[in-house]
Length: 69
Image (cartoon, rainbow, N blue to C red):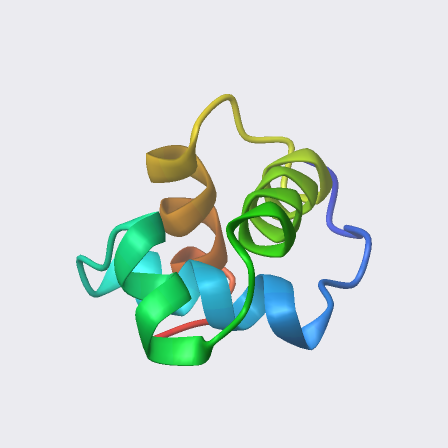
């Protein structure tokens, strides 16, 4: 993975952090009052920007880059 990645938006980081703490997409909708469509789009964009094949890999890469804790 190159050193430079596209900057993640605040919603993308928030959704990744929630997922890292075991929240499902439905949990995220309930906890944030953000639509499922926006959450799905945020997670998909985060995976694309982190060049991850799935959500688990995106969480791992974000944590490794110290973008989430």
